[in-house]
Image 1 (cartoon, rainbow, N blue to C red):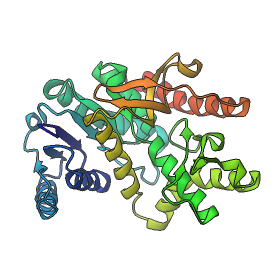
Image 2 (image 1 turned 120 degrees about the horizontal axis):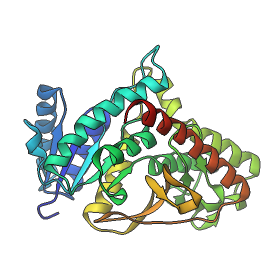
Image 3 (image 1 turned 135 degrees about the vertical axis):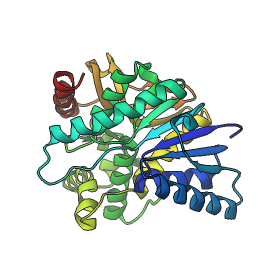
Length: 313
């Protein structure tokens, strides 16, 4: 953790929970919080920093007063953006959040041009594309958090169905972060046992549908917000893998350059994460049906990218 610095831009529920999680893990020396709500963020920084002291963590937490407080960050997580509001089209949300993202990226380019950028803002895959295009950074340097979260949701629903295997479930999900994600039951196991040896095809299909609607289920229950504990913890795993150069393999949203037969489009695929960011993209063997579903997912992301190319860049 020596001199490791993490910036979090956009400190709502996900950003603040992420800061709390990282501070208690003690995997970085300092965390900088930046948000337009300066008083609230200063209060959050104090609260989280005090909790870290209670936990005997060496991590300090500060609120950014100016953009230059982000100088020298090793990793910057972007959660800034607005949720979709009544009457707002998907394209409206896309373009509004792309503008917010651009202003954030412009600051990062000046003060932390070597930082690894983790995008959490929605629509996730399109925001990763926008971050890459507006920054000019290498594709290995910018990635999005989605697959770890979607895989965790799938694991939860597997545990819910089985009633055993807690902590031993490995789930795999590919594709865009949305309704067209592609859960991969044939690459999912419980204590090393293939999922199809434990559950019927009908039960697996039920789990896949629940996984696709996992985020929406929480939104409906909360009524005024969306999930944040699981997204924050999933993001913390990515930050940890990068800071500690763990070479861990996680599903993340990245720019494809020929992998799986696609170029210049962003999608969730398993990658190796280390100090350089995306150090390798892993290519899984997919069934014909999974290839079809992945193509459908990529097409959905491409439609958003087309809007950005026509109306933003």
